[in-house]
Length: 186
Image 1 (cartoon, rainbow, N blue to C red):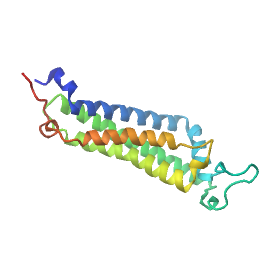
Image 2 (cartoon, helix red, strand yellow; image 1 turned 90 degrees about the vertical axis):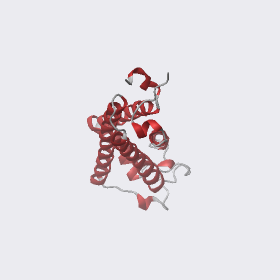
Image 3 (cartoon, one colour; image 1 turned 90 degrees about the horizontal axis):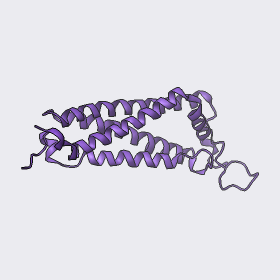
């Protein structure tokens, strides 16, 4: 009988961590869908690079050496924002599926393998979105770091760290992962 002893195990801690990440990214995606215009403005300003004049003398305008990176097409802004929402939603779905499978395995003799796989996919999608999309593309290509008004690098780093911790926990070796059981101490 597994009972309450499962609560102190690595698999259960990871299960809760996966749940919290899934809930978070689901709420982010839901907010972006139901309040499209709020964060669309962020994407529009980052892609158009209209506020990347940080460090320039007043009245100097935007840095001509990087302004050729700018995208001024509203269709592309919308496609970029929709891609972000799709990645967020896919991550949320994968994490929720992972959570359900991990929770089931915590309280039964089911294997943790499927839950770990789904959770890993969800967390990797978050890393892809925030490290690849926000830090690499937004931060470097579109020079988001130069904007005082539209800089999402701190949020991106927070999301990467939380997801990264989850990935590390998911892949820590443990006899409990292999056997799918809680050790019984007497």
